[in-house]
Every structure is written in C-alpha cells, then in structure tokens.
Length: 310
Image: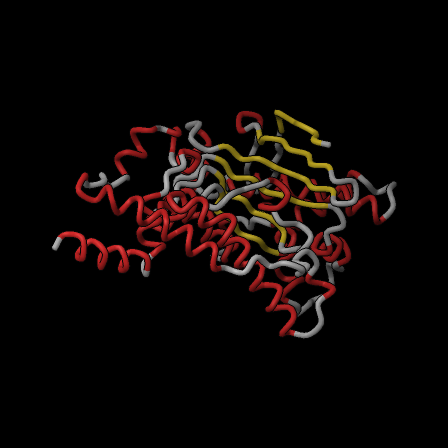
C-alpha cells in the first residue's frame, strides 16, 4: 500500500512544481539578499526539511526538470529589439517570450532565491533614477531582484520636505524607515530632457504643465548652474546642471529628519551617480555629510570618494 500512496503524492507534487521547487532547490548565492550575508540568518528563515520527505526532494527535482523541458525554447525569435516590432500583438509577443526566457533560465534555476524574495525583501540600496527609457539601473549596474528598492521620475529629482508629499518622498520614507536601506544612490544621465526643460523655463512665466511644476524642484541647481557657467553654451550648461541637480537632491534629502538622523549616525550613506550613455561611462561619488551646510538661506555640499568607471 505504501507505493501507490507515494505515487499519488508524486503526481500531486508534479502538478505543484513551483511549490516543491522552492523547497528542493538550493543555491547559496541567494543569501546575498540578507543583511551581513550571514548563514545563520539564512537558516533562521529556512524551514527544516522533514527526513520522511527525502523521496519528495528527488521527485520534486524531476518534476521541475520536466516542467522546464516543456517550455518553449524561443528558437528563431529575436527578443532583443522591441523598437523593431510591428503592432501591439508583436510587442506583447516579444514581451511574452522575454518573460518565458526569464522564467526558464533564471527563475527556475534560482527557485530558492525567488521563493525567499516572495516572503520578504532586504535591499541594501535605494536607487532614484530618471524615467528615461535609456537609463535602466538594473541593466546598467546589474542590480538583481531583491538588491535595490527603486523609484524613477523625471530628471531623478528629490524635492525638499517642505514642498509636501510626493511619490518620491513616500518611497524614501518606506525605504529608509521600513526597509532600512544602507545606501541611497541618485542616478542622473547625459542628455536629460527634464534638466533641459528646467533650464529653459522662464522665471516670470506661469505654466500649467505638470512637467514644469515638477522640474522646478531643481531650481536651486539651475541658479547655481547659471552663476557658474554663464560663459558656456546652453548645451554645456545643461550638462553641468545634470550633475549639479544630483548633488542638490542629495542635500534635499537631509531636510527629512529621519534621513538626516541616520546619515549623522553613520547608518545611511548618500551617493550620486552619472551615466553618460554616449560614451558608456559612469561616475560615482558620496556626499560628505560633515562638510555640508543645510539651511534656508545658503546650502553647500562637499563630495568624496569620487570614481570614474569606463
């Protein structure tokens, strides 16, 4: 009677591959999503495997393998360039193939990792990047699922706390107070249309544009740029402001008491990054909190740990 019962359970397991796969697959690389990369932390979150279920481990592995074999291999399909696709059907066809490729070649191979992420997240980074379609932090910097809590907006701006609630500072609050990230990275980029829009705005002209109203969060950076680059061309001024606005956003974050407190105590670091997609280079730096001055009349900043990646 034992064998028939086992066979029925095996059949049931094969019909529930993701559930079993999350228990049977082991890859120590997933531990990087937990603080301090501690094996003790991993074990505290891993349910022990009952000895009498050892046979299910084997059947589950076979079931996962069988499931993968049945998925399409996407042969002959170019999933690289969505811009060349025709109508909506072709666009979503490509999207489907990309999803299945991810599922078969990433998700199924790292089931333990993704099942752990389904329960909780422990990112060490919050990333604030531009919404520009050419600037994808995960693609550029290789962030994997669970490593970075992200928000993207026009011109990667962080408003002052006094400017009121926004999607950006709501995300900041969650990342800092709930997820307790250790680093915030603001990423700007070359040829930013949002910064160009900011630089073109006439001070005495009232606009009803949502874009105009949003980018005015960078007005201080614009004024500093105008003062420092009056002798340069408009294009050069925009390039200067793209980086100046990043540093102004880092300073603006210090207007939030729960950010300023953690930075002061060394529990949180604020970083700037600049991606030039014409030359494929990346600049990274860190805000030097001890050298910064933050007040209504005059704010100044000092940066450190500058790096240039090319």
